[in-house]
Length: 192
Image 1 (tube, rainbow, N blue to C red):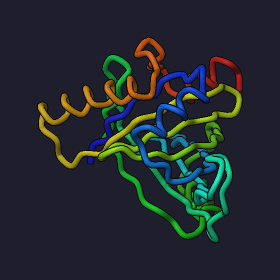
Image 2 (image 1 turned 30 degrees about the vertical axis):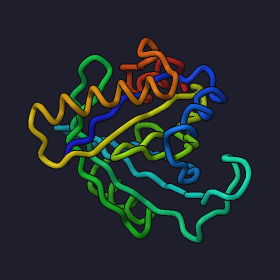
Image 3 (image 1 turned 180 degrees about the horizontal axis):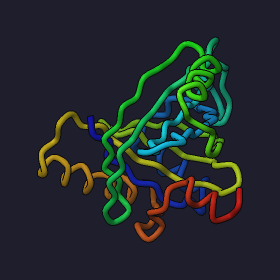
Image 4 (image 1 turned 180 degrees about the vertical axis):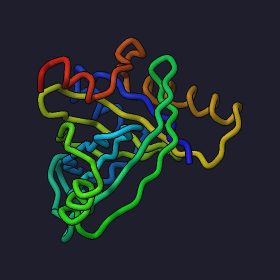
């Protein structure tokens, strides 16, 4: 599975939300708390354990919703490749039923906590693209656009990257706002 994505700074969230309403379908909000773990010995691979609480859309404001009954726990490992601000990741992801128990296992097998990150997202869909409006604690607002491809060829990958840029334009965000650094790197630079 290949994840093709970009993220860009969103300096006018009202304008972005207004633009999204014209072409994308709103699917609710999520609160995501990420804990990144790294192996203490080589090859020092990283894993992310995400606790995610989803909220259903309700009539009225996009910001309101009713909480789902259960939160979910996701484990993710990525091999990252980046070109011109667009990521192409090989991703392995699966859910676990008990986040605290999985974290205990990570410590037992030689991982340690590297950093944490929290974000609130608005979830939108357009064709086969997931668009998130992101409020990242300590950094600010972003838009993330991604699609997932199964064993893509070069042409399919190139087309997906072009479509990411077209969707960014539909969101009324300039391509100059694309951020190539990871959130983790940005948080490290701000000592957060």
